[in-house]
Image (cartoon, rainbow, N blue to C red; front, side, top):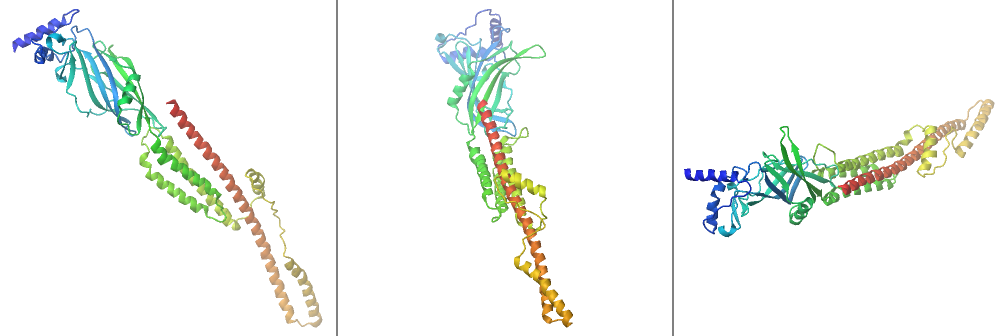
Length: 468
């Protein structure tokens, strides 16, 4: 035991003070067991950086391949991916002659050699990928370490443009405790190379597809004056919007179109408000059933939520308008006459604007008289005067005169009722014209509002999607 310890101390001393050359292991035979025996002192040095001069840093080359996009949790702001990370560094203690040792490389348990403590800063959960227990060791001291990692990383997700959103998340690789003087962390490939390799091997994307990967190296200064090296890899993923367009946007557009065409129903003959009420109820049930498809987050309100809410608000607004118009059409007989200024404004200005031509309705105290009633009214006083003269002459009222007086009173009462009825019909007809003009005007406003709103939302989606 003491002999083995002395050999280790001697090896460390030789390696530490070797100025420019690297010590080469001596194998007792040209087979793998001999190489393993020669590597035993190196295995015992797994706790220190594998450099012959402590002032020299270990250069670690890193590259990764994105093999799967497992999902995005908008509520927790978490991205779930599966990557294959590859690290390469040099162990100056483990160099041998392949001709004498019989092999150029060997797979050894990773616990027997020093490993750089490279971590992902955005890691949120423990790596649950299957472990790889071995690493490759080459005769020139190069070590190749490749292992899968299930990355559950924090990511600032912007879902304002859902479902046409593109998310940009970052993987920051750095050493946990070693500064730049101890570990030099470098990228062994470009972002374009990682993007192409990932697109070739990626297997699980679901509703997401890889857009691109960009990478850069940054040096971070600390308060103590040390410098840490970070490799920042930015992953851009794009959502597939087909499912949401088919299940959310198209049904909403169809229902809005049906609501728009419902203005073609004649309000005098059909209860349009009942139809619109059924449409609003159906759309509400539709939103409740598809609510689980919408993202849940408290940061921003997605544009699609604004779109769906706007559709519901417009349907409710047209329902209220239909109720108002129906009330004017069927309850206007009990309304007082419309003010002259209001009637003139609606007939002369709004009527021309919506292209509804109406005849001028004169409102005065004169009404059309019934010719027969007028004749009877004119003749009644003559008959009464004759009856009175006869009464004065005969002083004996005839029974027929009493009947005529009663008929005269009845005719006057009928005349007053007809006149009152004609005035009410005139006022009711005015309100009916006003209701039709307002209905046509709100229909035009509805078309304008829908067109402007839909075009604005569409432009925002298209412009943001193209920029990303």
